[in-house]
Image (tube, rainbow, N blue to C red; front, top):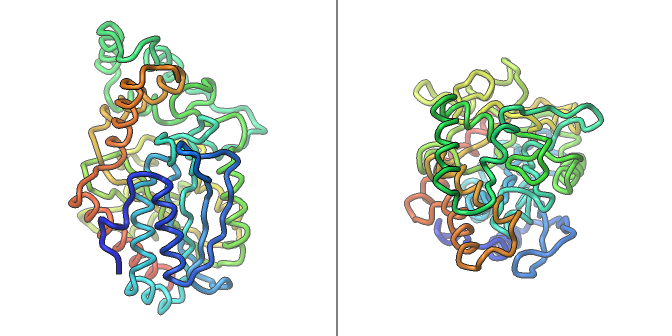
Length: 364
């Protein structure tokens, strides 16, 4: 067994080593998918995959981290702890459930402390059909120049303009405009890309290799940055399918805390497009699929979007003074990772419960 705090890491390279060591301790073979670039400290980057269980299992649970790179501190900690958790591993084995750990879906973002990929793309907006006209986010287009002003911190006039937009349209509309995804501004926030990213293509290959024969697939994708601090919201991560939603609620929901949905407005998340879980339907059409995004709160939403604005400003101004750049990076870390033992304990306990419930649901 490993201590909860010991399972988490402040940097990607350390997180990767803990994951690889955990796989060795569990007797698992790691399948590395090398990223074409190096990390912030010159380290190798990789999407690392390990299967715990029968390669031909009919029931498969996927547990993934760092779809949004800076959120990887949380997800990696859950995965490392799970690899050392004998009770969990025995539970999955007894239920006939194979567990596929995908560590660092977006290793570049994890290493650099950015939410986006090296292409400046939000991976969870990148899974659209690029052979067709891309969606147009008109509200974002009107906000783009305000969100990324010429100087940082924003001038009082810029902040007043943003506040005026929010006062007129509401905080919910602001969140939707900024976060739902846009495909017109390559340097902008929540950019969905012009083509499938390296991470998009790589995870599709992983699904084909490891999930192509499963009859039932569950996916718990670990996220941070929305909701009350430490609370793990279970957000429905499937297409808008009432049968799948009922199944997800039967597995993971309670009367007091049902699984939320972006389709009916019950989630803290806005209605999104280009979502990663669409790949399951396309790469594993033989399987019954049920998934959630386990979304842990950190800071209030306007503070999180403020950190993202600063990060994208820094991306556009790489020659910014070192003290300003360091402050922006520290703010990004705080927006997606609460560095306390209490928070880490909440993360592991809620993720562990969701994993046990998934094993029961898959084998039920």
